[in-house]
Length: 101
Image (cartoon, rainbow, N blue to C red; front, side, top):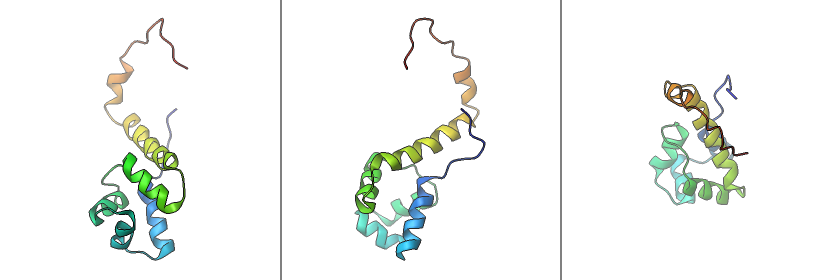
């Protein structure tokens, strides 16, 4: 399934949290126990959300880390499917025997 619009990066939701709580990047970084640069790079979509960071954000927001990871996965899939690299995948012939649901 190819999406026409890029899904929101987890950093967009993190920015909403900053705005709603009136926090600076440094204050959020302190609360999450990470460097300010880590928060900055997520907000600016310069880095992908890691499992560890999803755990930290989920703990802070009382949410499920899987929710945060699904946001990142949606972005990653969209970016890949809209890149030149997808052509190499399209050349792969499916196995006639192996089928995973």
